[in-house]
Length: 405
Image (tube, rainbow, N blue to C red; front, top):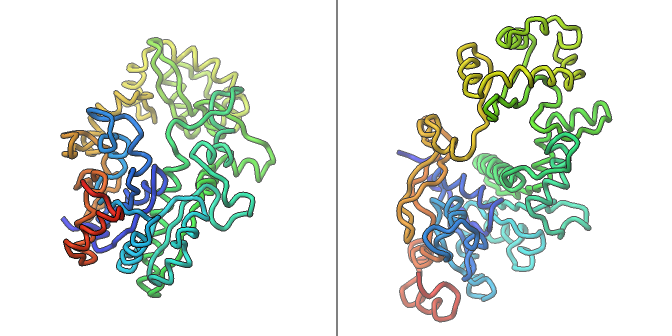
């Protein structure tokens, strides 16, 4: 099957999560991603869980993000290593990194350097506050949690009246990574028309701020400062989880007044339909606590499974709140092929998340395992740069590339 990005080559200098998410998306779509790693490897090779033993080639975390990529160990503290990198950039389409803004400039591979090497190159950088930032922010170190806190996301996450909470996955990194992929694809499309590369400047804080949707709209239009509401929606009610009599939770997503009337009939509480406190969605939001005091009693009369069956029959938007065990074993996830098996070197057969990009002609797919550290060093130099066996042996001897795979 053809792949959408066949023929696109990515020099991937990234590490850990944000930009590796970008290169994972591109690789899943068929791009040739060459992951440049230091001799010790990408930092995430030391992140658990480890599969079958603790070493740099057994990190389940690294494997999950780096399928479909190649690994080239390259010592960029060595001038010859920099020469190799320049040669690769010259024949590639994309350069990707997620260091602090001044790191690549100091190495001699910032945006201005790269565009001189290859004017057609797309240069994508992902960092906490962006390259075009206030001076005091430019070199500030940033992890996902820093972005979640700074962007305002943590201030609206967590139980009502409780402390600010981090979202349970690293959405600051992941959203920035996805936006990086979108930016690169747009830049590649523009290059088809103009012949020119460009810089894609992605900030984690920008990414999270851009997806705060209702919270930003509420503040800029009303100057009301939103706070956390637990599992509730700030402007739709009822739109949250309720506990059944078995202690399990089920979501009831009542997004309009017609559904509200239907929901009340299912509960056997038709009296609530015309109640002046609950008749419209704005009224239900205004009287949320009083409404929930009633609904919590009614929802506790049946198990979560019983409510799911009823809501399914009556076409009420609902969902059980699944654990990771439940969602990984879910038949719909299996039908969508969202967990796939790979033959991972050293580890053996294991499962990883599949690509969610279900294109009819060129879907994203997992077609190769994650690379062992430096697994493709010789192959890349021989096949792409035409290096001889003697030259590769000298690079090994000089500590420019890894001595062994």
